[in-house]
Amino acid sequence: MKNQPKSKPKIKIRAERIDHLGMVATTIKQLGIQAFFDKKIPKKSQHHVTNGQVVSAMILIGLGYVHRALHITPRFLKGLCLERLIGEGVKANHFNDDVMGRCLDRIYEAGPTELFLELFISILPQVSRGEDMRFHVDTTSMSVYSQQTNETNPDDGNDGQEPAVIQLTRGLSKDNHPELNQFLISLVTNQHGIPCYFESISGNQSDKKNLIETIKQTVKGIQSNLKAHQKALYIADSAVYTKANIGVMGSKTLFISRAPATIQFVKQLTEAELDFTPCRQEGYRLYRTQTDYGGVAQTALVVESQAMKKRQHKQFDQKRDKHKQTAEKELRKLCRQKFYCSQDARNELERFQQEHPLFTVTLEDIEEKRERTDGKRGKPVEDTPMRRTFQLKASLTYNEQAVAQKLEQMGRFVLVTNDTAMDEETILTYYKEQSQVEKGFRFLKDPVFEVDNVFLKSPKRIMALSMIMVLSLLVYNFLDRELIHKVREQDAVIHGAENRILKRPTMRAIFILFHGITKPYLIQDDHEQACEMDGMEEEKLWHILEILGEDFVNMYQ
Image 1 (cartoon, helix red, strand yellow):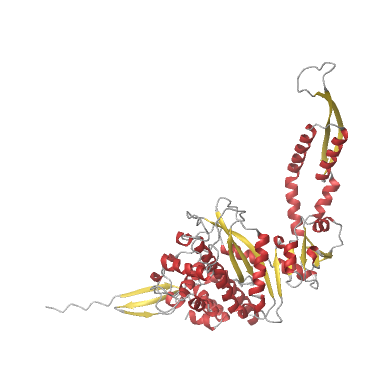
Image 2 (cartoon, rainbow, N blue to C red):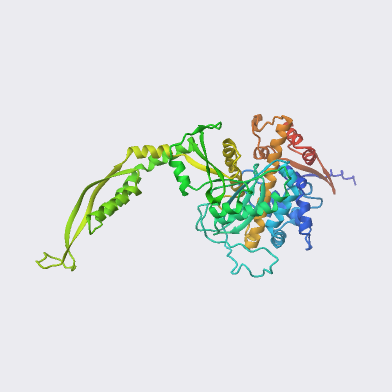
């Protein structure tokens, strides 16, 4: 019998994705996030992974989608090179709904806001780099699409050691989803958009109270940990600018805010003829004055924005006919009203004119009529009780001079600060940075906050998941800031898609370049051998990693 030829050993190739997540994982390690959570909420269950590893996994999931909003689901981990990204021996099947849900429960028990604040303080030197800190404060609503209902009593099961439970309620929705339950996130970022403080709040709370409480907590928790030479400045929108809140901040907690247009001194400033000075920033003119609103000395800066003026002019032109129709409808209603003396009719017409300053109201006649007082119909006889009534006959037209004056006053708003030594250009520049926190909110959410239902099991888990979302934003914006800093420091040039030079590189553009990077493994018999990273052939990818530092290079080798 002839010998059978030996069969060739079967060779298989297994590939695990790493994509841009190698940079995310490196940043998580550099900031010590995984180690922090392992220390603060140590593992108690029989699960294979620690709570720090679960937090790292959820951040990787949150930043895993390049082209879509943050979305949390453990299914994303399948096929990732988790041993390299998270830790030795870590596999995708170690993460499931139960593991992640229990981790969120532990985060809630420890206090999501307290944990985040303690973590931020530990990395404050890396975040601030010794710079002055400008804290941008704002809130946003997060709409929750879920079949879950609120817990009937927020204090059930709360022994006083756990944080208060938020209520998912319907409130003033900033997402235009009034039909959905919502909660609020109060967020503080620095001038680079890196989150410094956050808190989950019940969905129907007032911004006026939320913002000042957030500022107070930031002063207490973060500002007290700054170096002596580091200056702290708080920047918030008009909701924070009330007499009560100004009294809380006083002259020591420095702030910049936009003053509400409903305040009398603001209205007077925006309607006055002012001697504006040109601004170095194109499209703006400035006028500086003083105010002591709320009992605190402040600089009031009237800003005229050409872009805002143009936008408001267009809106006025579009609604010009509608405004007139509305005023005419109100005037017809007034003309149907009966008065018992002609002077009352004149007084009411004068009040109408004051309420409609853009129109000229012309009194054509005051018609006198006699009517029965007994309520009967028919021709009155000689002794029938009668009374005189007066009705207006009037018309209106646009007062073109008033309209021109109104158009000239458009595009104006008032910024206020209790740092009276700050110059006008700096006040405007710092206030415009407020877009950083707004960008953070856009990053955190789609119009509807969608996650796997397990994470919406209770408001407690939503509070914990909110911290994961803000952590994801912290990692992303910290990495973005590091890239910009090191590009400037090294005077480096980065090429993006189609080899175009990225004048202002962002991590989103860099993440796209790293899409498709995998770690292949050659399997023969029972032996598995790691191969070189696949997809890293382009020199520009290694150039980016070298700019970021040695740890990033090592992650992809």
